[in-house]
Image 1: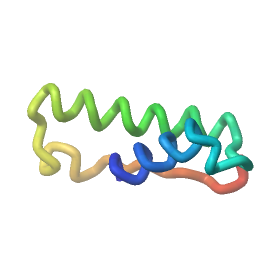
Image 2: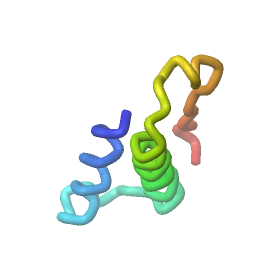
Image 3: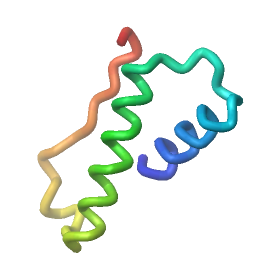
Amino acid sequence: MRDMAERLLEANQRGLWQSANQKILDKLQAIFYDFFLLKQTNFTPYQYENCYIQIQPNL
């Protein structure tokens, strides 16, 4: 998920994703940052088994 968010954000920065919606970009940045924080705090996925990230296409 983090890698996908990173690639989409990079595509937007390079001008390859011209129809990017700002709300979607904000959510992708939040996803990328959340995974960055998880990595920094050394949490394992098992501690997040009841959590999920939902991206709604109608933003």
